[in-house]
Length: 461
Image 1 (cartoon, rainbow, N blue to C red):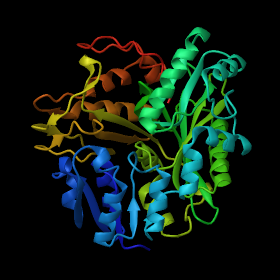
Image 2: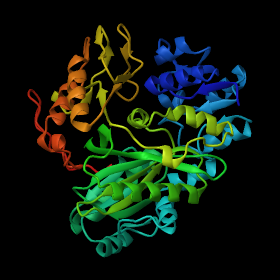
Image 3: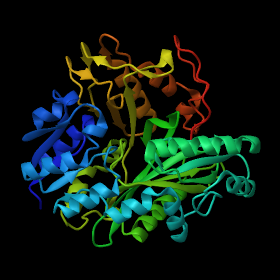
Image 4: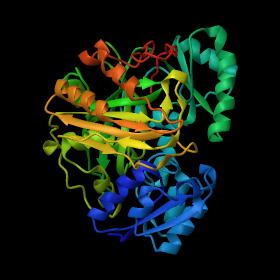
């Protein structure tokens, strides 16, 4: 087992990883930008190293600075959290070259699955069901026109290197394809440094369901239930829950087994998530793999009684997976709401500021993952996630009631600061969400008192 873990991240996930490291008796090294010098994880860590100024490219994306911090502090493992460098194969490879354990899949696996076209081909070979789409990257608009004609409209144009809802565009009409193809290609080059694109059939009203997997270094793996992430705004998840409401048990089992089969076929190691679209006929279709811990991992932890970060660390240390599939029977229902510092009345523009007032919910089976504290500050330099509010209950109706109550207790205020709390409550009160019949089109058109109606198209992932 390694002795010192450097957490190459910030915010709530850095604090969450640090806590599990402490429980395992591991020494914790935090890295921080000048913007985050007062972060909670800096105080909790055994040692903290400033790695650069506020902009992420100069700090949390600066591989050299992070590796130098690891060298200086004697860190023998790096946990990348989610986002930033968590799915950058060059970083995983550099850690290995420095003799540092990267808490995640091997670099070659990250590279193969991070290339969405290659991942699609790999999973098709493993027998996972696919939406109609291009066989590989589509290099030019003329070829895209021919491919789209074979797929059938609407199609979605996606960046091979994309993720997190970025680098994609839905095309409804053939006349719009060339223009939108070029726009996505340009955006992909700007965002990811890779302008390769591929095409898939677009399902405007599908459900977004994902499977959590864990695999060790010895070819063993398990899946830990399914999460429904269909409540999305602009293709960004805002509410996640498990189990996926209304999904037949046999279909859930098929999806779990398919995800695990795909993971083992690639030599996957660590925690990962296989994302699927489920159509209204009960068919499921592979979307992508996330080679990291997910933002929404707490709902799986609450229903399965498993610390996923602990399992990540033990697997990375070379231990065999101690979990058996037959023992992983979920209990109850869990739900997570992402509370963001953004203003729904101004088209959800980020609304950071100082937390003059902060009240966090409590009570039975309520978990709040956050690094926010009263007097602290939500920085404008990073993602506006303020807190993840997670609840558990014996069944979904009780979980929904508990989430409403807990959201009602949440309060954050300060100059310039706004949150999406009331918008989340509006989503929870939508009849389709209450019934568990919603899909990725749910959020479009929801009106919030005091905010203008939303007009964005249905999202998918």
